[in-house]
Amino acid sequence: MNLKSLALHETMETHEIVNFKTVCLLKSKLMQGICFDNELKVLMEKDVQQSIKDINELIAFYKQSQLLQ
Image (cartoon, rainbow, N blue to C red; front, side):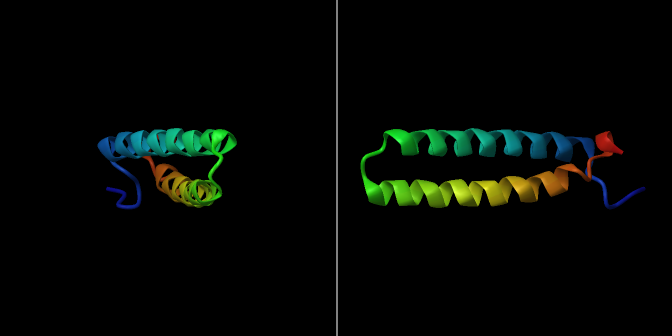
């Protein structure tokens, strides 16, 4: 048994989280264009940057999937 790979249910959960974070990222990025409050824009940009980091971290886990090996 390979302990470094994700089980199938873990792969699916990781996939769902990546999809959710991607939708959140896109929403924050698009809302910046119609937002007039500079403080809110700064918060949304921080959210965008954090979401990018989170997605990259999740992709690292996703690459350990049994489906990709």
